[in-house]
Image (tube, rainbow, N blue to C red; front, side, top):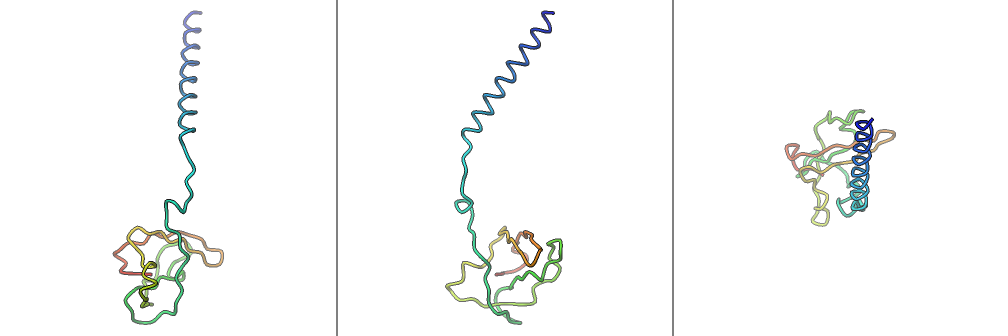
Amino acid sequence: MNKIIIFFLAICIFFRIFAQGFEYNYKIMTKIPLKDISDIRFGFYSKSASKGKYNYIQANYFDNNGFLINPSDSFINIGDKDLSHILQDGDVLFISKGFRYFAWCYHNDFGPAV
């Protein structure tokens, strides 16, 4: 009988400690607006060309599953005011066209791109 009571008390103490730890961790968690940890911009739109300095990534270069199926065959030259649209390694593009929504991570091996 004593073993059952001791076991029960041990379980109660464990859950009490666990609950306090959870409550403490929950209190230190804060909400951070997405704009504070990321740089959100809408897509760049311009007329593409057959030659240019930057690959011009478009939604039709991806299949229905979000995989790149068509290497960029359209290019673009941009001015100084639009240099912020040049993709950096690790940038994530959230692409939507019609009912297709997906994300794609840009890597430098694709070449300079917008």
